[in-house]
Image (cartoon, rainbow, N blue to C red; front, side):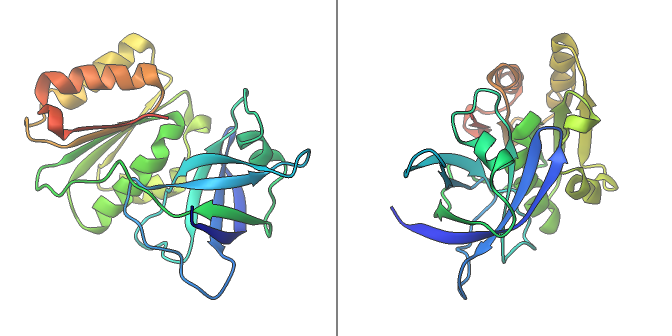
Length: 225
């Protein structure tokens, strides 16, 4: 499998237990282009053994980020050398190896307003989609569910789209309130709307159940962790 050598240009906290990584090419070459919804393999070095572990992370980039790949990585309490190593050991200036971008979660061209649903770290591919849609002046609504404002990632990027009314935050909702919020967001959508969702399985199940009542099955796009 082809890999690229990259450098961590920036590492910063984007939310509680979530760090952002900005990766740039480790040479005078351009990083391969990609479309919203893409992900990359990240080869994460392990101090206790010679081999790396490989984890997949969605690219959060907007169309303006042509010289870097931006990732959002949540520390998993059950991590076995992936996210925990990135949070604890990977530093700015470090070199990493990554795979070429792949995409099983593409945006579809449509004049209808796109519906985007994200929960927790599931915001990462949806953030790329929202930025691409905004850049191309295509209509969309993003519904972002998080436990609290402290747990909502990349609020700086999202705030750039808030003034247009595209971004809707849902904080600390009970399962019942989440179900109502999703239902309200979906029930007025035309049946040919394209809808995209990423988040924990329980959240995905709620969103998918509502979408299937109103939207053509082929227009429902789900990205599981």
